[in-house]
Length: 183
Image (cartoon, rainbow, N blue to C red; front, side, top):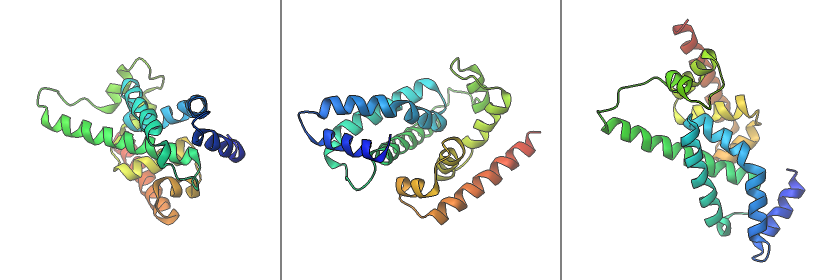
């Protein structure tokens, strides 16, 4: 979506007469890229669907608080990333509390997921990414999979480009080390 199209969409979202139709367009336009961003963080299809529902509900309820100086795509990605990270924190807390569940590796979970279409190397990459701290994992996913510019990520995560470059570099190093250990 071009910047002009986003400006028009923002106008339509601000007008109660066109808001519902504009939000439908927003959902159609951004659902797939947001889903894949969420999916790279939470890994499973079912979890990604749950998080995406929360993302769209939050976007709808927070339309009034959207600050028009940011791009709507940046705002949506920020919501999606925050919802994904919150979900992962809650999931980690539940797993620490639960003693009934045995520990299953991310790779094995992915290989068992009927929606996962990768091979063992892709599953191992996802396992390595899952080991990263939240910020490094997010920055790596945005740069590596979405090929986002540091300037866009900087706006989205509200941090400096230098800090993002350092996070990405550390993430790549940790992933490489993970692969060397699992050769």
